[in-house]
Image 1 (cartoon, one colour):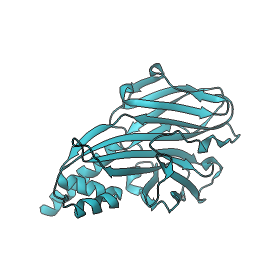
Image 2 (cartoon, helix red, strand yellow):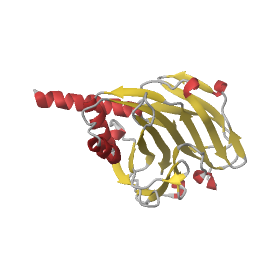
Image 3 (cartoon, helix red, strand yellow):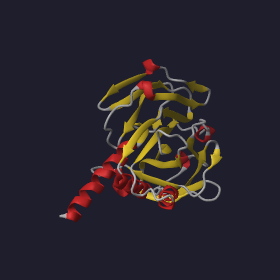
Length: 268
C-alpha cells in the first residue's frame, strides 16, 4: 500500500511539473511565404495544453525573419481549446524565430513534492544546497517565469535568424540551422543565462510520438563548460529542448527563483 501511494504521489508530481512547461508551436514548422498562420502556446506537456496563457501574462513577444519584424499586440492573440493562439502573416522566404516570455508567478510546494521535483528536473545544485542548509524537510516557495522560442522555416531558402538572441533571461540559441539537419545528425545549442553561457545545466529533449506523451520518451544531456549541448534527433517531426535554471532567492517572500526555457523546431 505504501509503495502504491508513493507511486501515485510521484505520478501527481510529474503531472504538476509537466504542467509548468510551456512551448511555442505551430501545426507545421514548414510554412509558405506571404501566408497567414497561427502559432500557439501549449501549457502542459508538449502535446497537451492544460490551460491558455492570458495576454496579461505575456511580455516581449517577437517574430523575426528576413526583412521581417513583428511585435504582436494584444489583438493578435486569441484563446480556444486551452491554448493561446497568435496570428501572423509570413514575409519572404527564410528561417524565422519567434519568442514569448511570461511574467513571474509564485508556487508553494511541500518538502516531499519540491524535493522530488528537483530530482526529476536534474536540479543538482539546488538539491545539494538544500542538503547543505538542512532544508530538505522544508516546504518551498518558487517564483518562476517562462521564456519560449520556436523556429519556423518559410519556403526553402535558409537565413541566419535561427541564431538570433531575443534577450530573454534564459534562452537556447542553435549553433547550426536545425532545418539543414536530417534524422540521425547532431544539432548543437548554446544555452544563455542573462546573455552568458550556462555550463553544467541539465537539458531535456524529446519529440511527438502518436499516442504517447513526449515526456515519457524524454532524454537528458548537460551543457559543457562553454554552455553547449548536443542532441541527435532519431525520428522526423517536431522536437524540443527544455531546461530550468534555479537560484536561491534573496527575498523574504520566496525561497527560489527559476527561469524556464524551451525551444521548438522540426526535423524532416
